[in-house]
Length: 430
Ligand SMILES: *Cc1c(COP(=O)(O)O)cnc(C)c1O
Image (cartoon, rainbow, N blue to C red; front, top):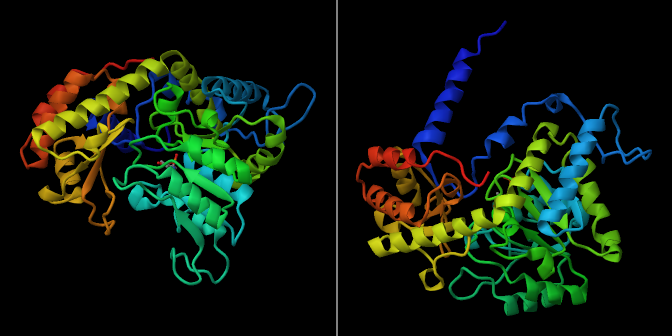
């Protein structure tokens, strides 16, 4: 070896030990992929290029030679993910969820267009908003990114019901009717309950307005049939990250279930939005890993996703019963993998998230509906998908709730956290 990398390897070993064996990780956008998913990423594909689509028989779709094996993998990844989601079209090349959304924006939006998205304080992803890919895409020169003022971009927020955790379908239809957007974007990052896709998409269909469902967070729950089925409910496309509740490598995907006529209009611009739009080299080393994760989800996804939702609800109930307020109690806290906890009384989200990290419980602070200052959010977002994979069940959620409850109030629970984690080290559902 000509360069010394022992210090780098030492850091990796520390990360592995800390995050895989000591921490209780509750970041809602993360997961640990299976040993097989990790293993297949160390391959020759790491150094290769394969732009375009797989060659099909005599038909040349690639811009590079030497792609015969990645062609096989890419065809399988495309076909098998279509099967898993009941989709007719899939693009497996986006290198992340944001790259998948960027492809749609590049394909279908121009400066001066109008869109409807979730606002960030209602849980929307920052990339949907004014400064993200959608807002930037519809901005014209001289236009302000501020929403609602004079000269502002034509960005509108999905209206919410009074509890602020559900999109108001009727008001959304009225808004769409009034502003006539080019695209409606549903789905978000603080994502507790399904979106009213069926109602909104049915109306959009009468106006030929496409609906993008951003399933970044909930893709694994959808694969397991436990949240909602956006494509079957009428969404034009579903994008997603393949590393959140879907426990694969860090990549993205675009899925659709269009008949031939619709596909002629709504697929080719998305395809060009991916390449040459938002990706060229699509990180070939991780595509076999996506295929592995797709097979794992086909076999175990239903069972895994159902346990995730049961665990999230159990954790919400246990925390709430202990006296740590959990949002959306009147709706059973959640129907997804995450809950939102209000910690305004104990110093706010930023302070409490740091207190939890000091005890090796890893969460992120989050704005709750009605919060005005993103730097002083009152909430925590807590996701159970990763600990569920390591075998935690409703009973373990009860123990975990006590530790979180105590740590929020400044009690030292680090040793107890390590003891609980040590009982759940073996990966399930693989
Ligand atoms: C996480 C997230 C994204 C971004 O996905 P990446 O895979 O990190 O690029 C996009 N949309 C939503 C709603 C998300 O939560």
